[in-house]
Length: 429
Image (cartoon, rainbow, N blue to C red; front, side, top):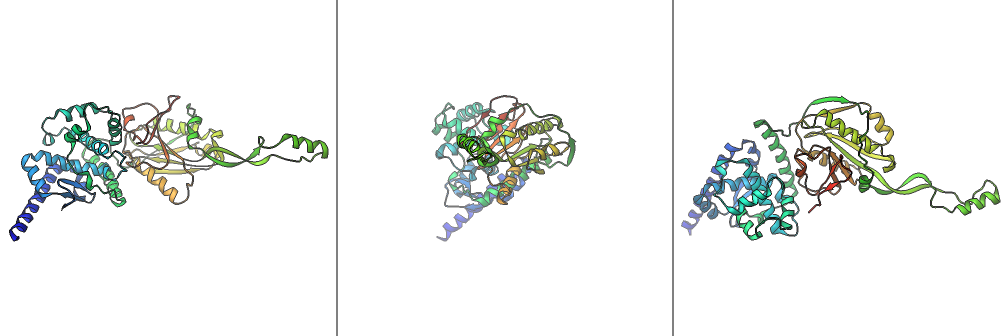
């Protein structure tokens, strides 16, 4: 028994050494992942016969690790990165659709597609026809697990689910743990990682900007938002005479019989379905030029000038955001907007992260400043970090033109081209 325990202990030590070696090699390739590497501890677990993560630890079977590493170190090295990216993209913490097997496959394919685009020799796997054809078929049309899940559900890929699962499977998703604590931790790590990557490459990342420019809104946008804004409307009483819901006969009878004394008068309030609350976010990151942001604000002016779409008392929050909230203004009336729009200061010019806006909206709701919010409009060029979790209010990312980043919008959000009279949208899973 003692020899068995010693052998087991030695195997466990060897397994951890294998993982550490993989981590060190990956760190040399991706130094900006230091926070992610430091977050996952190593733990032998009976919950899995292979390897996986619960968001806090990397859980493993020692026998599997040693065998996999001895057969091909690249598989395990790539698999380690595969697991980290699952966490950074929030896959273990998202709501799983009813077809779990399809969702697991979609997550694996999304991560492998990301790794493949890195084109690192030390991560290249042996040629596999099914993998190659699937990744080639996906191309740029699917940038998220949600989109790939849709393609799989519609049988748009040329292989069976079993064949694709065998080609893409590495880690055990059965140990995923969608705890709120882990989700928030990895959301913060995703932002940190993007900032770290900015420091090691020339790519646009998520560093906050400090630049400021003043613009004057001289004209309103041309797009007619009235039909679209009905999606965010609510029923509410408004202070105006209701001429439609009273009997004109009794009114005239009273005026005729008693002089200036109508028997009935119109109600002083009227129930209608209009906008009461709305959040408008403006992307002020470095990828959006001053002219682009000014056009965003002109479209915002068009929205807020649609008086028939709003109740007299409105509650609209206008946010400027690059990778953090740069400016917040509350607008309570059309007159207040006209005064504010005379001279607006654009603040930002950093990297792009859409998630701070959603966190700020939740804070406003928790503080009772937004009570009946139905929707959020986010004016952007689409190049940034999107939230992994669907909010419980309707969200539309608004584009001035259809860019290369159009397909990056999550499937739970609407996509609106203001240059068109019709709206293109993606249905949530």
